[in-house]
Length: 300
Image 1 (cartoon, rainbow, N blue to C red):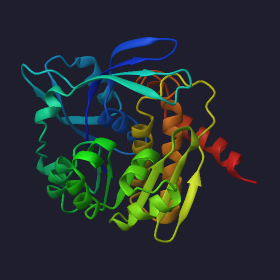
Image 2: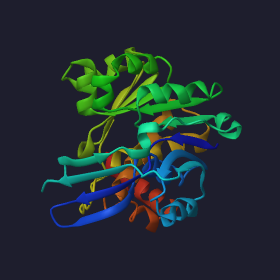
Image 3: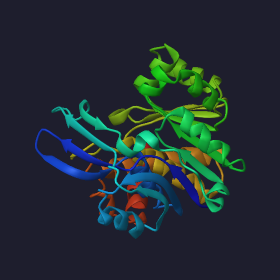
């Protein structure tokens, strides 16, 4: 079933211990949409400036991602992010953020987009996420992402959002910040008690944890030997997960678990090169082959 994602598209500058790349295709919406496109038709809602390279749009469209909802603002500049990774590739420093067009981003979805059954609200202010949610009253499944900035600065709006969505994806430090509890098992359940039917806590190289009323489990990361650029891994995880759910048309417990596994594998490919360079070299069968390896790894 078609899937709509609302999120940022950006120009990234990434520096690792071995290399620096400028003006890479980035943004939560871009990583999510590309990963989800291996499983489902995807409609991307975002905003860019006049400096946005056409080649990046063509790359997204090459995966049959519908970019009709991607607005180009004349005379404006695209959202830019610059980050630097330390040697262990787990920790990074944000060097610069230029919100530019994202400062005025207030998406109005077309009638076609409003009829979506599956909706993902990528990492945007909760106020904006709620505006989008009100435009799509007939969704089967709505998931959202969040971050420490919104937890600290828009907590009231975030609290309301949590009551209105089916699933929330966040990382371990954000779960601790949101609940004030350093135990991730308790933190995961406390976030769920705030409203979502299920919660996924991303733990980077240590995998992800799932929480619902009836289930709690952990899936490990896929063992990736060559980590080149971790940027966008979490968004790729969410895209793979949500894309598989949209493909299956449900979010039953067994579907959710396999969806998390596919999200894990999408992220494992993403980190093997800069930007979307690794993902653009694979097809669905590559994910399926890695899924076979992953399942064998987990059986005992």
